[in-house]
Image (cartoon, one colour):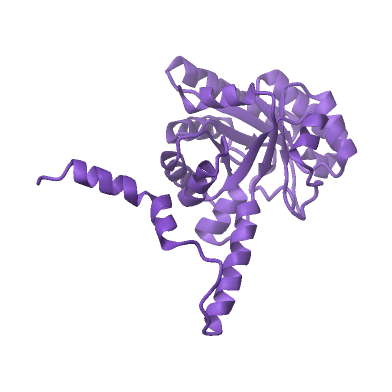
Length: 289
């Protein structure tokens, strides 16, 4: 079964799909080992982890693709990938969709921001006009359909940031059109309250994703509440990164004081996570002795 088909089966289940965000192969593997069904590779987290820069369009297609290929090869469950604006015009969008599918992603997100894009929960966002937004999604859907004919597969998530620039009515119109074009999932970024979240979910058909960014623009609600509103997916794109930053900063403070840090994982557990036991088994199997 392909990663995309696996994801379709997961989405067909009644419960809300909880997506912790990953940013490298190890974080993705930890998410899988914790029992989650899928993960989301977001541009914010990858730009921060790989380059140490803000999510403002500074990371390139090739860098995101390389990071995604490493993540997808490290795990055995579906991975969502942030494809930003598609990195160019409609033809670039199709290349990006194909590249993400070949890297092993089960789903790619394409958005309607002006390039260079910005994090959906920061200031200064701008969106392209309707025609260009719809053209991007159409190109992505066409690329998906072409992949199916050649034995490939990937889902399309279409995102709009128009709520921050043009209001909820425009954002809902775009999300509805994305669904009509054929996007598998829609994502209306940064609704400001539960009323906006409810209106979006009641107005747009198909699977919908909620972005749970701590201290962001949208209320962080329990998965059960999100499901009652009409969401199918709840993504937590920077939760692990926030937890990691706090843990690392506390550890560095202890080291700076000449103290032994507390609350560290066992070295044996780290060896297990990165796969030493499996390596040793293969090394023994293929030994020349």
